[in-house]
Length: 399
Image (cartoon, rainbow, N blue to C red; front, side, top):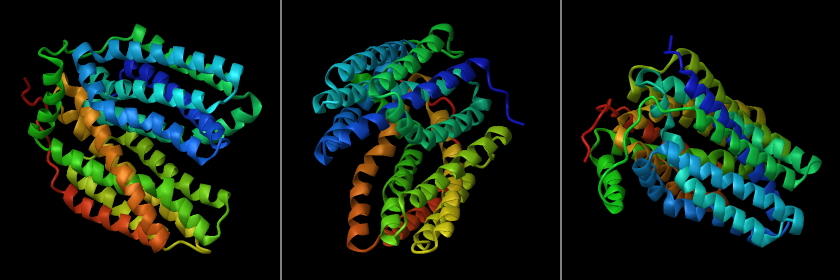
């Protein structure tokens, strides 16, 4: 049986999951409003949110390690409460004007660059190392559930209560995190790092390169993210349109992948992770590769096959992530937790910016199935590479 999770982690996880749900609902609503102004405005809002995140996330990780994750999160969540309330006033006064939506995206992107590395490091501040896989599997399952529920809940609320009320509700969700942070104290606290800010920033890259197994794990994380994340967000919708499926059928396939990931996360929460990290990650990625290939062959009238295969994709990636996540976070020295999380986030999302365009072009020029087969092949290579993962030293030396 896995080590029981401390109450402090469960309280913080409940508050942060509520905040994640509120943010997911709000961003569906804002995306829907932006789409009413046309594709260029919708793209502008997404760029306003995503570009600052990419540019500042390493800075955010360094700041979190210097001032302490709790204090930084108290600041960022307070800013988001104020920003959501200001957005609600603006939406009530002017409606969803393009400039207001872009400003909201910019504020969210900047704040997220500082808050997400800190949030990602919280498991090791609140949970003992023995319970780390259990804690991260629970967070993974809840995160997948939020992603699955965000759009439907957002659609209902847009119709029933409107954008200003949704923004106020998101402010309340961020306030819940503030309350949790105010009453909780990290079980394992590390003092602010010394030295100049620029030294602190560059030291994160040094630790990633020198910690045993960490650089390879981040490269593997980026390669997997580059071909897994576009499956549900890009390639399955393209396959659905090419196969003549309606939106409902396509949504079932996308939801099936999320359901597979949620199921695995809940099982691992109860049973714990395998002792051989590399073999477990390899097995999960091999299953995901087979599932993606079956999704590719499930076009036309084989929607049921595609949905079943999508469950396998979600379950396989769920197994891989549930073992790879604790491996990466557990490999980081406690003085560099947020910086390593910033590098992890960058490794996940930066390659996807490139792979989305490459896979989209391949799907358009050849077929969505060909792009999916390409993803399956890359996952197979990643599965082979994962067998080389080795347990990292718990506390690498740092300066």
